[in-house]
Amino acid sequence: MDYRKKTVVASVAGLTLEGMDIMFISFAMTMIISEFNIDLATGGLISSITNVGMLLGGIIFGVLADKYGRVKVFTYTVILFAIGTALTGLATSIEQVYLFRFIAGIGAGGEYGIGMALVAEAWPKNKQGRASSYVSVGAQYGVILAALLSAIILPTLGWRALFFVGVVPVIFAFIVRKNLDESPEWLAAQKNKKASMKAEKSKLTQLFETPRTAITTISLIIMATVQIAGYNGLMIWLPSMLQQSQGLSVSGSAIWTISTAVGMIIGMLTFGLFLDRFGAKRAFGLFLVASACAVFLYSYATGSIGVLIGGAIVGFFSNGMFAGYGALIGSLYPVQIRSTATNTIFNFGRAIGGFSPILVGYILQNYDMKVAMLYLAGLYCISFAVMLMLKKDDLGKVNETI
Image 1: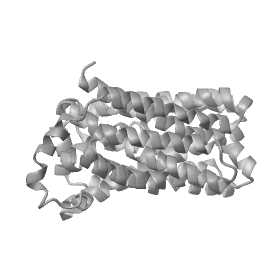
Image 2: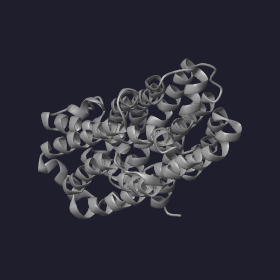
Image 3: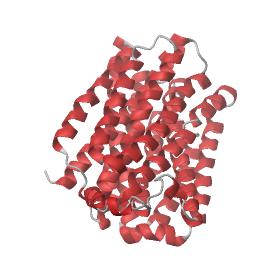
Image 4: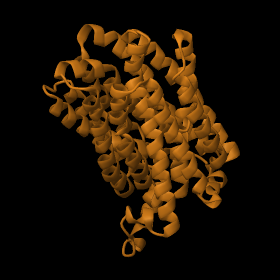
């Protein structure tokens, strides 16, 4: 297997395990709420705290990966993430759940940006959109895996057993460390490090070095925030919504989740092709508008067929864009700060957008599913407006370099 394929396989596997872990919370949420006697908004805080951990881990491990190497730091993030996940199954109070999810979040936060940086540095510019989409679908493989495991484990062994599966990523980390070499582009950059060290600025400050760079960074953070808020709002609560509104069992909601995840996978692969061929502005613009419409209309879906097909369509558009952020961010920042930029921007989005489940939980308690879906549709409209404010040159760079 050549180096390009190895980077994709490693990054896909890492994101698969991360996606699986995130969806464990979704499927186990009803049982966790019942066991610890908490309300929906307090339950939503579990996901939010995980995302705050991701922000901290993303910044720390992003900087470390730019300084010490992608592969070495990547394996450390996976091990920490696995430990936090397994410990969640041992929690005896909701406070312990928060703590262990925070630890898992720190590890998971570093994994995404490092994997994307590896892929960006291994693949040619004209194929980075597609390569990014190949990696991004890993999260949906994780969703499908979580749905299958939840349907098997939850009814018989309970929610704690589900999180004990979290020890598996440790094995994966050792395999990656043994079989994947460091990024050649990063190694080349290190050769010139001594000459530039005296003038080198903080990697984080370089994201805001000029007014134009600062605007671009902030705009990307807003877009990433909407992406995560929309995804979390849909995937964390919709299985529970469907269990109540459509009378679905855990197994039934798992079928819906798989249908939605399949739509997301097809959407990501399609978005990668769109990004390479038409450029970022057209690709993101089309998918953002379509997401707003699809999410709003989905609140009117009825019947099992309507729920399944509607979920797949919503997944296609709303999470198809996820495939583009790695390529977009990676193309706008140099190798010296690429991992820092990807992790910081996307994990800021995770931390802020991670509070979306709390708001959705509040809306569901006080209003209904239609109001919740209207809120999510509004988020995509905000992201569309921010994307339009970006100068053409900023997004034009992506079309030229990937």
